[in-house]
Image 1 (cartoon, one colour):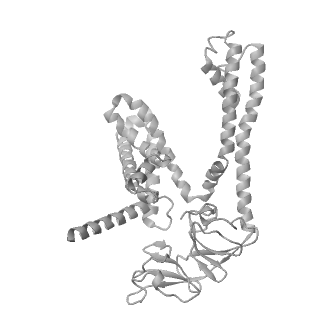
Image 2 (cartoon, one colour; image 1 turned 90 degrees about the vertical axis):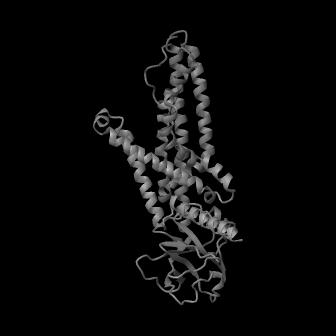
Image 3 (cartoon, one colour; image 1 turned 60 degrees about the vertical axis):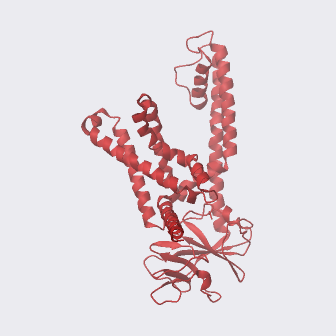
Amino acid sequence: MEKKAKKEVGAARWIEVRGRLFTMVSTGVVNNRLNQGYDIASTLILLINLVVSVLLTFDSAEAFLGGALRTIEAFTVFFFAVDWVLRLITAGFLYPEYNEKKAVVRYLFSLAGIIDLLSFLPYYLPFFFPAGAVAFRMFRVARIFRLFRINAYYDSLNVITEVIIGKKQQLLSSVFILTVLMLASSLCMYSLEHDAQPEVFSNAFSGIWWSVSTLLTVGYGDIYPITSAGKCIGILITFMGVGVVAIPTGIISAGFVEQYTRLKRIGDTAEEEDVRFIKVELKKGDSWCGKAIRDLHLPQGILIVTVQRRGQNLIPRGDLVLELTDSVIIGAEALQGEKPVNIKEIILKENHPWNGTTISNLNISRQSFIVMIKRGKQTIIPKGNLVLQEGDKLFVYSVGKAAIREPYEF
């Protein structure tokens, strides 16, 4: 029995450690100092690695600082390897809907997992396979894609991702049209020009190179038609290329207009006003210490909005147990202190785009979350499948001045 109890305690502690590691390596957790420090350190190490990689391409830097630069590169790459291991062992928290093995596999084959793996693996592979050193070095460029994790902190950058995802069908259609035109023009030009200049248009690939440079630019001048028929076709394809390139440009531009129009419409159809709160710090002897929030038996109308614990803002779910030194934020008078909680009350009016939408499909910043919903006299705990209705009052907690833009994930 004792061994079983020790084993269970050890398993619980390991889960707790993994949870803390997951919070540390997660990007965009702005209410945790450890996570913010880790994000800053990983970004700086990545930038240093990229600078070193560029300097190593200069012979002068290689001659004077080659040893130091290689040492710095080895350290930064080792950090990428440790980061990958940490994300691997915490994959179960990233994909809670899967078991541990499936979560690990899901991370390994995800785009982020592949980028993380390519950030360090090509550096070590030449030690085992020296013949492929040149090919492995090419894959190191994947490190630069780690910079996209900064996207979690800036909602303005997320607009680009939202537009591309929202218009992916139209963009794929334009790419399909471009591919068809490229193949057709390359085969056509090869047929017309091969006999006149066989050394230039020697095969179909030469025609593809010409068609790409003509459709997407005005050509490079190394391959061009010399026959009258080829020149006429070249003029026609050049005009078509301008139109084809304009298609995805127009799609993306229209997507930006729709996105900002939607955000403006949300602002015009919702009322926002500041909600004032007070902060109560639990001390020794307080009856709330050691109790779950559901067991506090609060009077009707008293709302706990968030619980501040060791620099973190915790969502006040019913099973959250209050601890000594916790700061409980209660809806009432103005909150005094250096770090006030930024709460907005949003009242959904008629024709508001959130009416009839589930919370999981809302556009809300990663730095904001809904803490409570008032529907008439009823207080509702926000859940992902809850459908919002006209007249609902949403209490939204935001870190800083985050804009309401992205879907909130529960």
